[in-house]
Length: 123
Image (cartoon, rainbow, N blue to C red; front, top):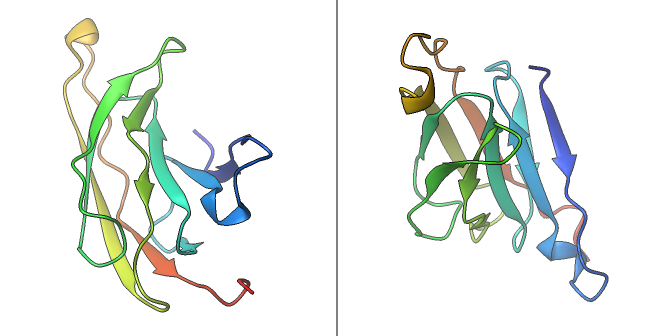
């Protein structure tokens, strides 16, 4: 799967800081993601997975992974960025077994990536 950060369409009444990004897995470990306070972040992969991260960037809310109608796994709910500027979080992914494909071994997990709070573009 190609590595990408994709904007999700949003309602016009929502402020720009509410814009959500989806981190598409797998992706290279050297690739960091810049986020701003108020944004929400979700992760998506074509295999069942879990994501863990160091504290300080996202609101403290439990997340889980749900298989979507298109067969991809998406974390839900999206996590809101609440960290101060220049705060950093390291995200680590773990492949989990998929009950619907017991015979297929999941791939190795993608390498960790770094999430950096960058409010330089904010007014």
